[in-house]
Length: 328
Image (cartoon, rainbow, N blue to C red; front, side, top):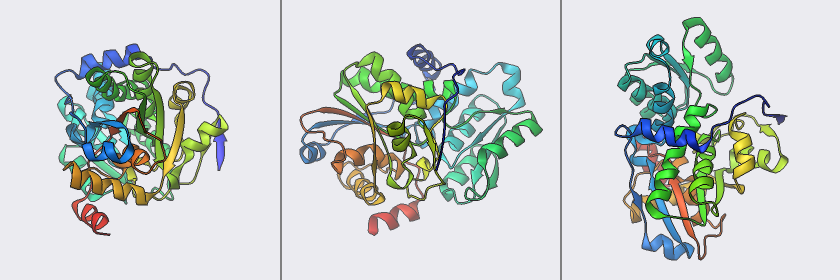
């Protein structure tokens, strides 16, 4: 385990950037539904509002940040092409956004990424380059590819336009349901959490924002508690979208300033939450997409008597794996 400090020279996004992203995404991204469940409310003793980004274009909230980042580039830069690294959801989002904006896209993806995500990324028209996430450094590989090919790198979380785009999901949630006591958000590299916290601070100032990550990869929780970015080995969890090794130099300062806590849940809680979504709400949600809801259902976060927003971050899961997890 190592730790690094965020760069003091970075320019952090603000809520004005989230508002600008909403304008760019208008008519392009889906305004996903907000659902509730009487059974879940009774189980946790609170009122939960599920923002269903599993029903977003490309199957996850990632489309918001990807489109906003590419749309913010000047036309000449877009024509040269973009590069991204991702285990799946950011990959698909960049590939789809690039196709819409007529931009060539190259995506660096781990060999063990879910087959459904690899296939979808290629089907959207991107070139996929694979690597071994346990022995190769994706950031170093991406930097080399971008330099060799003259491409613009759009990382999955540590980018101001990506963070701003991700914050639009929470902004829509607050606009629809009003002020909340709690907002639960999954954590990988922190882009969704940072963007959501920007929206909460502006639209529901009394709302406590809590990040949720897998127990096997709790670098965010460690960083939050230690006050500096902690880097861990590549974690192993069924939450493949949250297998990051550290928070970002942009996301961490925002999380430090605007987030109340970060908690972690075991994989077993994710499977149980997948089952609840499938059986009670008729929703297909991937393990990573279950992180925020799992914190409420498992009791990791006390929701009794509270109005709670939950970002259901994605639904891209291989059918065979999905069936196996639910059957197990």
